[in-house]
Each structure stands twice: as C-alpha cells, then as structure tokens.
Length: 329
Image 1 (cartoon, rainbow, N blue to C red):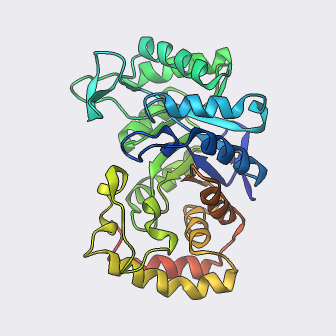
Image 2: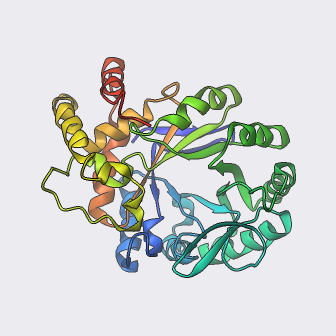
C-alpha cells in the first residue's frame, strides 16, 4: 500500500482510506451488522489501510460508536478522522435535510463545536482526533464566519484534541477563507472519473497551498466496480437515488465503459475497482489526492485495498479520462 502525507500536518496515511458512512446503518444504507463492521475495520488495518473516516451524522452517532468499539485497544494503529458542524440534537442552524423524521442542521458556531467535539470524543472512546473536518459549510439563513470556525479549530489543535483540520463540501471562496484564517490540511469532496468538477476547481489550489484533496464516492456507490451488466438488478435505496448512472437509460453507458477498460485490468493484473481507484489517485499532481472508499463488510474492504498498490502509466490515465468525455459531469 502506498503512503502519503496529509497536507503540512506531518500525518502519514495509506493512499486508500476506509469510509464508515454505511456503518452508521441509517435509511441511506439499511441495517448494518455491528460485529461485521468491527471485523471489517480490523481487516482493513491488517491489509494496510490506516485512515478511517467517520462522522457524527452517519447514523446519528452510531457510526462513531461502532468505530469507537473497533478502536478499543487499537487506537494508535489508525489515523482517525471525523467531522463537525452537522447536528440533529439542537434547534438552531441552517436546514440541511430531514432523514428518518430527524432534522439535520448546519451549525459551525464555536460554542456548538465545543459541545460537538466532546460528544465525538466520547463516542469514539479517544482523547484526540487526528483529522477534524467541517462537514458542511454554513448557509445564508444561519451564517457563521469561517474566521470564527477556524479560530476555534486552531484552538482545539493547540490543545491537542485534534492534530489536523479539514473541510468538506467547499466553494472556492470557502477554501480561500479557511487558508486565510488557519492551517487547512485537507479538503474532502465528492470526486470520481464520472464527476470531475471539484477537481477542476481545486487541484491547483490544493497543490499551491499544501492541502490534500480527499475524494469520497470514487466508485459512484458501486457502479464503477464492473459488477453491473444490463441484466443486473439494482437495489437503488436512498444512497443510490441521486446517482444518475444507476438509472436504466444510463446503465448501458457504464457497461460499455467498463467493458472498454477490461484490457487495462489485464495489463495491470487488477480488478475494475482497483483500476478506478488507481485512476483517481493519479489525479492532480499524482501525489496529493487521497482516495476514500466506503466499506462495511470484509469482502468490500478486500476488494478496495488493492487500488492503493496500482500505479497506472500516464498514457492509460489519459486514455481513461478521454473515454468519459461527454459522460462526466
């Protein structure tokens, strides 16, 4: 497994990390087996994955609780990231969504973050968080200056409760504010070969400012694993509802694409999943993109891990990029 540094923090991680959203087991993903999730987290580390990413909003605290149980006695073996700024247990904030009858609100006020970090530390059964990420930015209906948010995060860093600061779901203006008021080491965004917009906006900015670009959903909820044919039944569920590639009119395009890439899998002796993860990691300057892939079963993490050991030739990266022109958003 390749290794890389997170921003200017000095933190070193595996090039592929494990995302624990589905482990939360809310209606996006359906029920999750806690014991299997814990075994999966342990297996990921055995296979060389060191970075583990979760958030309070994943299952309304449940994902953090499961991660906390998995890390008991093993905390130093993992680089742990979690998030802040998305609450369901308070009344003030900008409206994000309603899920399972619960209202989720964006609130990045320092006094609310002070509460939230303690709740996360308790659920995670740890006294420090390696990378603390602002999950969503404030909304006009409930504005919070990034200078205030970043000032508090820098205070947490000075206190040793967090080691590095990240932010997710950013505009370019948000990014500029973060680097103006503190040490931003990571930005986390949805990015895949089918959805490259964020990269076009941020790769150069990240390189210039020493910020790691971390991709989530690089496999587009599984559609890029090469496991789908025109006859494969697809369980859409809430998690896949917004992924247009699962829709019947688009699925043939994906099947054609993955068929075209099969010779590359043969060339690199890898699976389609490995190939797509390797393409993702090769973006930007080829050294500053971290790939986060969700998993809640051992077979899933076993499938994902190989992508962190494949290095594609520049010509193959370019040819894959050319293949999706007209498809990518």
